[in-house]
Amino acid sequence: MGELNTLTELEKKRYKLQIMLPGIGAVGQEKIKNARVLVVGIGGLGSLALQYLTAMGVGTLGFLDYDLIEEENLSHQVLYGMDDIGKLKAVVTRRRLQGMNPLIQFNMLNVQLNQDNAGAIIPGYDIVVDATNNQSANYLISDSCMKYGKVMVYGGVSEMQGRLSVFNYKEGPSFRCAWPVNDEPGDPVEKRLSGMPGILPGITGSCLANEVVKIITDSPGVLSGKVMFIDVFGYQNRFVDVKRDPANF
Image 1 (cartoon, rainbow, N blue to C red):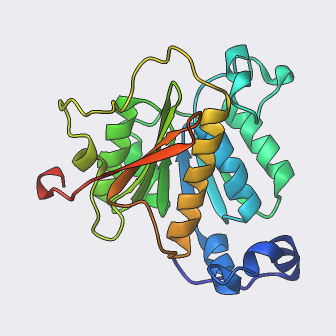
Image 2: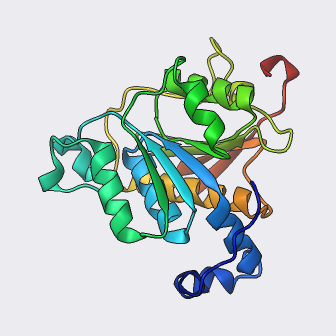
């Protein structure tokens, strides 16, 4: 992820509690500062993950979305308020995050990721967070991450269940190893939502940010080789192992 930058006195003060942790320390915080992370989709999952990545000091944060904020978003996309309805998510997100932490470099991408622009966007980052909750986007992001050698942190939500995994990490499996195209997995990658508690993307989005920081700091327990299913009402997590299949690379 490039050469480390020395922490300033302001950064040492701001990130004091993280630096105190043996698993992070000053060296880990420097890695966080030097990291470049792209979040694709800034709805409930992505906007929450971005808030924590911003607060924890990820040095360069890109975020990509082309949607407008709608009133139905407000129950689960807590970065936005009533005054934001009708505005571009990317524009509002940049303003809010800059207010949270002016030490971060924010790259606003008010576009839709597609086959034509992925090659100009994905290579500029170390880690790509897939917060789209959209099946076609899942495969596009997965294929792009494999092509350019990037780690993919995947999250999804449906009804009362969150999903989380890490792909392309240290010779681990890819997204297609978990959900091959045209297969019928036990838990769908995407389905039309009939309802969802507002807290679900918040919990899952927090876990996404946590996995990103674990990857950056090379901490143990990264969710590679397994998918975690989160039951927010039952407080039960279920893990499904995923094996690397060379046919999916």
